[in-house]
Every structure is written in structure tokens, then in C-alpha cells.
Length: 248
Image (cartoon, rainbow, N blue to C red):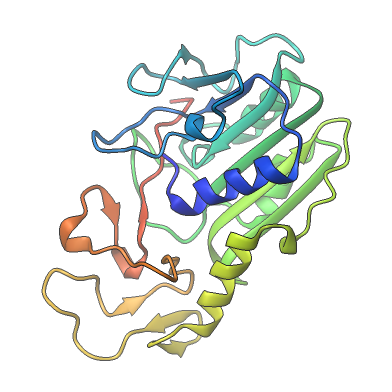
């Protein structure tokens, strides 16, 4: 499942780069009944294939990331969004993503670092920016950044290009830069090392007072946890849980 942060990231990536068809999402299962942020909506004019290791909403094709049935070079753009932490063997998974991607293709991956354990159905790993860069090492051009505390980011995003130069920088993504600046400013919070603390006792039904260093909340609109389902508000983080894994 892609939360608004990731949706904005992929939307900007689509504007920055020519993303070849077909666009294939690995880990596309819409795990919550009220989930509406399907990435295929960002590609209305392109062939889009949603894959996961189990059937359900958003899934067009059953795949195991460790042994994909796509042929060599059959995929134009690979999206693996908040899925690798659920894969038993993420190194093999990324080698498979590289194999099925055609020359000139793009692979976008995201995962969490400082985030609560969440199943869907299993949760195995957490990745530093260097970890994501290692996973993308088969690609010819790689860009990676963490969002949140520099030493303890909440979210890590990365893009790999196969037989192409990406020419991406942190400044390329306005939404991520704005979110990082909001984290640095920490309005209404007190900073204790990597932790942001909201003074005062929170109202009943709201998030705990202690906030993660990487607390990623939309600067212009905050989620009301009392009226939101299937949303992690632990340590003040307001983002949806990750999607179903492509490999059990």
C-alpha cells in the first residue's frame, strides 16, 4: 500500500523521467478494504500490471519476487513500494527486478527504517539508505535518500536505472524536500536527540506525546487517528501500513 508520501514521490518521478511501459508494481495488493491509493491511477495512459504473491484487490498477476515469471527485459518500469521488508530474500528480489527490466528501464523501490513491525503477512527487515543502495547495486545509475532524521530515517526511497543515467538529486523531488524541511522545523515540538516530543498531555484518542525522529506528517493536513483505520500512529507517525509482500 502506498501512503500519500509515496504516492507523491512516484507522481513526481513520473514527471521527471520517461518511465517506459509496461509499468509493473510488485506488491500491489490493496490490503485494507478502504484503501484507495492505487498507484495505477498515476499512469492512466500506460499499460499497468499489478502483481503480488497472493490474489486480491489490485492484483492482476501472481508473482514471487524471488523467482519472477517475467522474461528478461520484459518490464519497462518496476515499482516495488514498501514491499522489500516483507520479502525473505530482498537481495534475490532486486536481482530479479534487474533481470526483468529492459535496457533504459527504471526501478523505484521504497521501504521503512524506523517503523513499527507490521505483518501483511510477515515483516522481516529494515533498511538504511546504504542498504537500499546495496539492493540497487545491479543497476547502472542509482539515487537514494532517507526521509526524517539523518541517522534514523523513517522512510527510504531509491531509484535505479538500467543502461541509462537518471540525473536525479534530492532537490529533484519537491514533496520530499518540503517534508524534510517540515521535519527539521518540528513545529510545536521539542527535540531530544533523534526524538521529537510534543509538550503537554495528548487528548484522548490521539497519538502518544513522544514522536519519532522521522515523524512524517503532511505539513498542511494531519491525520486524525481517532477517525482513521489501519493507520500507524505509533510514536506520532501518520502513514498507512505497507502492502502485501511479493514473497512469503
